[in-house]
Image (cartoon, rainbow, N blue to C red; front, side):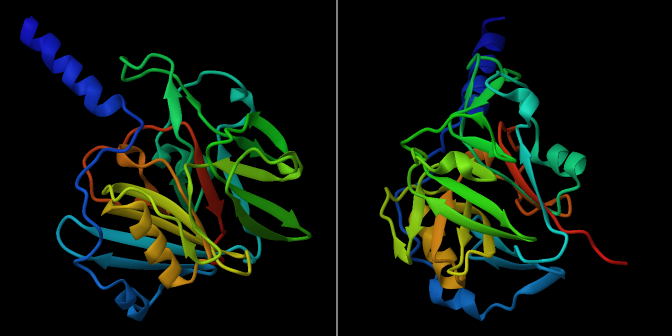
Length: 273
């Protein structure tokens, strides 16, 4: 019985934390970042291209490029309005993608647990979520956010360094993350901690998104890669076991366990048969 209790608490500690986990304190020195621009983008469908890069068996990443001006594109956000200001059950990015028919899906906002000792505890985002101009969860001034607005029939994106913005409530979609890692092509310094990472970049036209997923990278590594591929601004999302990026329902990560999360951003682009 005693051993069973010890095992239970180990499992809780490993799988319940929302913070990222340290792997090492080394920069990305074993890979020439400039080489990634030589890789050919693979077209997935209209408006979507992808790059996969392997550094070694444990270090790899994928970047998915999405053109926001693609016809019939739509935005999907979790949590939905029925979760407003409540604790609720987390879901997997896979389930979200299936239920919303999202072509691209990524985890976003970090979150708190109602009971940190329960694996199936209810959750709540620790940052802003606005969907269709309705605030579902309030801003957290220490974190950054992704903003997407629809102008006529096209979407435009931007990243703000702090969610405490007086004009934020006028936006169509606001999705909280951690911190901005790239600002006007300038890489923002952070501690060199390697972990699984989810991030998102935007180009200077504000109409191209770069979805990043990778294993054993620092925030600065993510920023360098996104900058090299064409992003001028970028934001880091919740990392560690929360990190997940799906394309057409298939994960781009190679891992046994992915945590259910509190917040997800998706894009749907219908295919034409």
